[in-house]
Image (cartoon, rainbow, N blue to C red; front, side, top):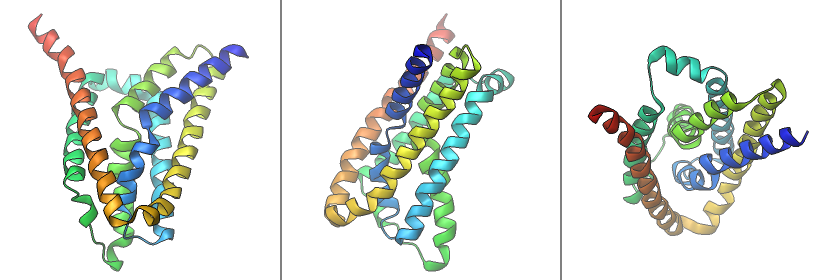
Length: 210
């Protein structure tokens, strides 16, 4: 029981840190600022569900897929870094805050942003996917595997709650406060992007030079 508890605590803390729902919240707040509460709730629900499914799928079959396609984790980091950097640049310039959605396009818009960029790569990015593959590989029993999946589910529930509550924060901050927060988080996202990019690029370059 103590081993399951230790493994579950490790899985929960690592996923919560890597997913960082509090860091995703400013992007969610900005991209859903013009949506009604019902559509904002649906966006948070779909993004959380899609993220949970993707992480579990990679946990169960990620190592097999990576070996089959010859993909390295470092490649995931490089691509994720590029996506994060472009997204952070838009946030830094407050471009995301200028999105206006027509009533006829709300459903399509909700479906689009629920999957990209919210679910991928903001919630289940390279770090979370890699963590799922590594932890599932380290799970020595069926109980630990179930514990891992439960930890991911718990983190996704917390992520949904945080995103769902962001509507109240939007009203408190207002447009100016939201733009300031978005620019600040944009800068942080760009720094994370650089770290991801070079942490993936460095091993590849070293292998090429050897």
